[in-house]
Length: 93
Image 1 (cartoon, rainbow, N blue to C red):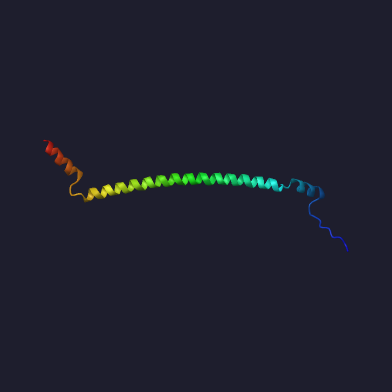
Image 2 (cartoon, one colour; image 1 turned 45 degrees about the vertical axis):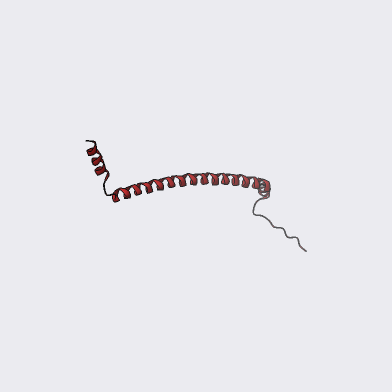
């Protein structure tokens, strides 16, 4: 039986450099842990930002609803504020 050898396209010295410079499994796991921690921190930051935006949106919506309610009450009122003010001014005289 003839022994078959697989030859790489890289010269022998380059093959040796490549093997030594390849990251170890531990190094890869460390990088992944670091990236995971960074992603988790970003998730927390984004959740906090969402909470702030939801609060602002809620306050804005509530304020808008209050203004609309007051406008509707004023438009449905039998007397406008000006009429009521004029009447109270006349009573004082």
